[in-house]
Image 1 (spheres, rainbow, N blue to C red):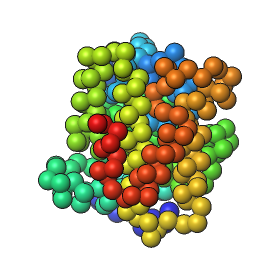
Image 2: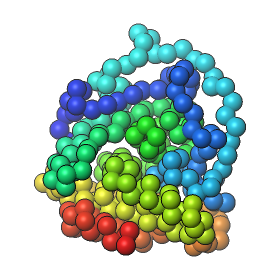
Image 3: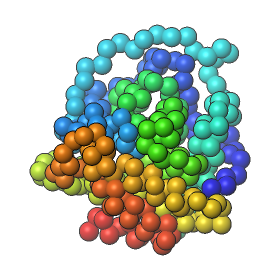
Image 4: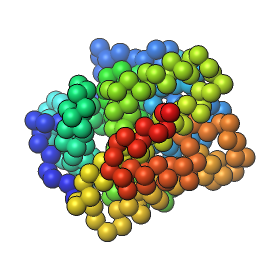
Length: 292
């Protein structure tokens, strides 16, 4: 997808790269919980887009040790413009964030729902979020506590190398999916699902799947609303990425038995289906069907 150059005054970017995760005064999440809270945690967390520490299903609790102190980048904290130009992936994510803000703000305005843009946080290997520790093994994630989309840009190399999720739009899909979780937070959907999970723990995983598939659908809607900017192969790149991160595919590739009761993000077929529905319709209300 072709993006306009971002306006550094119109996006909120934080850069923790080089800090070793040592950020004084930043809250660690409840219990230091991370991951997706199932016995396939190690399998999924290392490769899945959309691990959301704020929507844990009962999860893996870790006692966080003190962060390792490292020196900040020379010259102090980087500005938005500098952070976005560290490398090609950073620039692409900042441009995509700008596009996502411009696309979704009018949708919220038309619906009469207050809109707040998320912040984009870059980190390397380890960092801190309002939901607890950020670790490269978690993959990209959204933290509802601080409205942050957390990205370790090294993950994109893993996408290409280990998952076969190639192409620039596969990267766009990553941030667009996490942005979908931000939309769910603003509309109250994620809070409603968390309440239902608490009331009915046996349905927690199935409810998590609904959230993830809706985020995929929202990613597709964003692409559709910018259809004139799509380039040849973009749709195929996105669908291939969605297929690569289905729960069943990840289990199979890890030599595990496919266990539907352990799914937290949906099958490859489901993820492709809902991304495609969003891309073909361009209508965010289509995504609401998952919550009925």
